[in-house]
Image 1 (tube, rainbow, N blue to C red):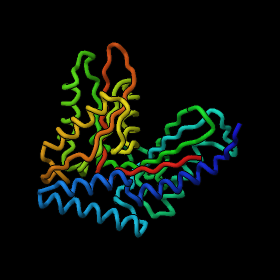
Image 2 (cartoon, helix red, strand yellow):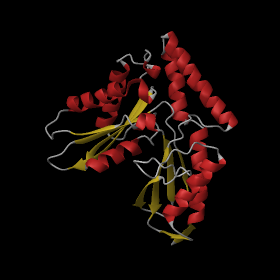
Image 3 (cartoon, one colour):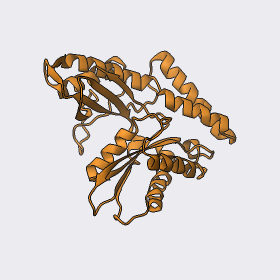
Image 4 (cartoon, rainbow, N blue to C red):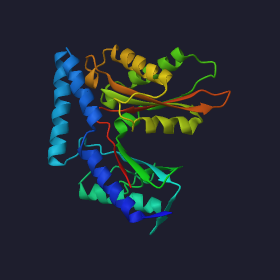
Length: 280
């Protein structure tokens, strides 16, 4: 059995938090560049150029891509042939987040009390999801998600008799409602199935997938393309000021559900969809 000290996880989380906040994902940046080539609206072109310039400045100067440096979502897959040593896993992850946000001079946005809004001043605790998988490796994905877009995310418990078109209509309505508040062009994570909580979790995890990857499920791959095309035909465009690019990509994940259920969750993410991953 392979042993891993949790201090190594802490250090990886720290570096991933900094990378995610300073370096826009290549797939996202490539999608913005591609959108710029296709765009014909002058204002939309100017906005896309600004987003590209912003990403360059952030990466070059090691400063935040967006002033909302998010609440950190950590998804960690732990091989069942690993034994963790040296302390508590959850504490190690939160220590990594705390160190990164202090070291990187990143805004600390987490409050411990929902009514009096007391800031924890560390950007912790993070939202941590762990999964036990085969093997002796640990894969860590970190996503600092801002709440301008998070607040526009929605879930709906559709009737089990709902059609694919009804599901698509719900997703498109979420985009329309989000409008300029969530800083388009968007990336959408869509979770289908499971239970109420699992659908939202799938939607969140879908945002970790590269938007230029091909969904192995042919049905979902087709739906992703259809939704991308239909949403971009709305004409909302960058920052909802008009244009061809309202969404950069749609990623979908699915899980079996109950005979009486059809949960669908949409996790809206802005043009600065940030994440970074590593393997131990």
